[in-house]
Image 1 (cartoon, protein in one colour):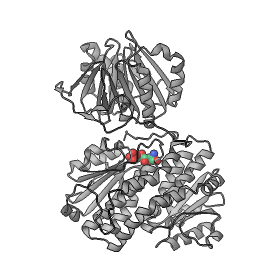
Image 2 (tube, rainbow, N blue to C red):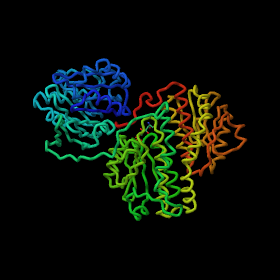
Image 3 (cartoon, rainbow, N blue to C red):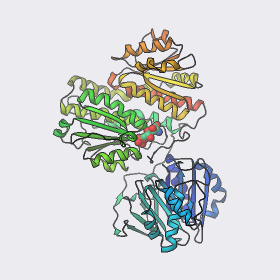
Image 4 (cartoon, rainbow, N blue to C red):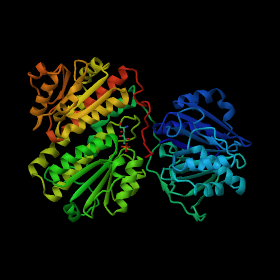
Length: 614
Ligand code: AGP
């Protein structure tokens, strides 16, 4: 987590840094800070909470700061030390001459800190980062060269970092380096912007160089020098980014989350375009680089992901096993990386991630790659760290997702998985041809059905408001919509802070049913298909314990009115495809409850969009 940005050039650094931090705010918003070199000394400004708090401090004095053309900035998601002003970056050494910003975690910071304290360093913060400031300053005292000091000091560090460093005595220099955390240098005419992610640089240049681990770049206004950890000069790979400056607009919606929910129909359309060319034509998924024989030989698929992406992967398990007859394991990346996993040359490992920067999933993918598995990455960020490990890459092209609560990226991941499952099934000839034809036909009309749901929000909003003050919520489903229940509950938890849990409906009676009473809403996801009647019975069991019952269904049945207090009806579709439509009302319920409760919908407390620490 955390975002860092540095600027050196001819513009007012404060403008570039604040703009950059605005674009990086998805990486954390516990506190923020900026350091500016004014040619003589370095001034730092910090604020706890959202970036707007830092802007409030800076705006009244901005005209005085505008002349600085060198600076670094940071947006924080707290790991070590509470979100306080003292713990906010930039951090400095004891003499205050060296300042730095950091994204990542220094794993051996305790050991380094003890040593530095013995040598006389006085620590002001509780962060791991401050250790690095003291460490580099110590080396600078001996070497009097910032690049060298950074190079020698970082050899002593264990863990993950992206760093931007300035020193008072080198007013025309920013040194940046990274290990296991992203960092990209934007290269302009007589200016450089270095940042954790492209949106912070793209307003100034589309020429960029991604730093590799342990590389160190030294930037002045008109030069860039790249070295490796052994001080060998390198020629960096400069790329032209396929990006346009991104205007992060809500397009008239109150929140980005609502805008993103409404983008879903067109995202489905875009993803299908060029893939399904005819019902009798094989699905085209040229992104998969396994040859047909290798696809036929697949004996196992392991999918690693976190959070919402994990829920998309869980849906994938149902369809891939059913259509392709291949065993699929789905596992949270954070668990996968700490145990022995059994793979062989016929195992396909799929990493799923909106951001492509989730540390746990990157580690899982890296481990699998080292073991020789073919790596397929499904991501919304084809330029991400994770994408660089891909043998096959499916870019879901959902556009920048600003809201911390993922919605449209989930939809895009689901669609990508349906395409993949059908693609493999066709090559393996492992599914009923009529079924695959039917699914392709139905996929094409799903965007319209999604639009229909979104055009009938009012009853969903009413239901959301009715239950907004509930302290707990239960979502139940069976089969392929069990992940829908988990995802609906996650959405509610993360933006409204209501304790919501998803259960397989059959498990309710094995424990959770004890919680039910007249204060607890139970939302049953009941799509037409083989488990419909089963969920109906499970819902009866919940009703008998006086729970408040809400149905989300695509079946029109007057009898449901006796069982359910409220009913949300969505268009009918094939049971296999029903997760695509069923999630939309659940996203809306979460949104309307959070909005009703006055929560910060787009930036919920304690969260960050990209979880770049393990
Ligand atoms: C989703 O609403 C969450 N904010 C979170 O669970 C997220 O899905 C998870 O951190 C994984 O992120 P990724 O898809 O970028 O890897």
